[in-house]
Length: 244
Image 1 (cartoon, rainbow, N blue to C red):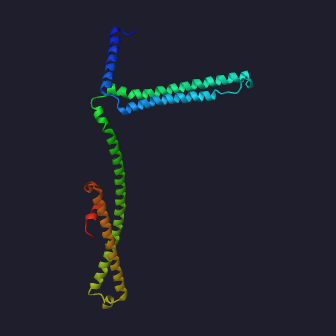
Image 2 (image 1 turned 135 degrees about the vertical axis):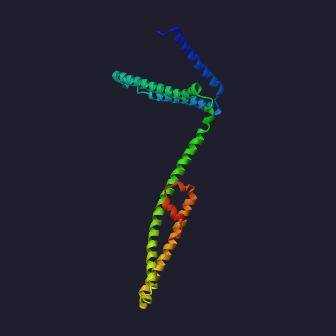
Image 3 (image 1 turned 60 degrees about the vertical axis):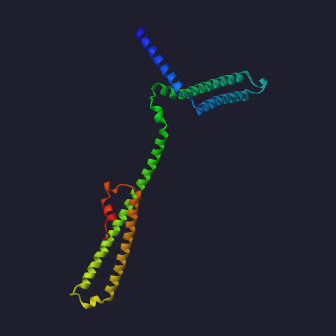
């Protein structure tokens, strides 16, 4: 059995909770939209009850008593009573759950809400919107990183091919300038055609290299990311370094 002191403390707690709820209700009045929502909720309840009564009247239209036996009538009555009890229980549970949801939020705000809750609550939609924008921008940035990695890989292959062609060109130029090379080699048509073909390949490779360099530079400049802190050191060297 509770002592008088415990009973007094419990009463004091209830009084304090009631005072907080009343104070919060006095300071937080319902807006016009909230009052309109409550009014529409009451109208919805009345409409649902009217629909239930009309449906019950339609279901109550049975055949003539003479065409139904006593046992069938008793079974129909028992089934109807069972359906009514189930519908009543479902309706009661539903109404109780809805009322609990409607009452719980203001009660929790009244008892546990601080002075800064109302000031911070208006910023929550903006926070959610900014979170969605941040997620979208992060996905776009990841896609740009993937594109940059693909372009960097292709640029490395072009640089390698360019270096091989330049090496072959230097070798052929050295052979042409070598005094020990026979004169017929300098005027050989096959060698000259090969030199011209290599020169065209080098020019084509250089043009492609410049295009890829411009593309990567545009991606880097348009991303707005501090590339100095990333690990794309080789891509950085290809972007800002001179053509080999």
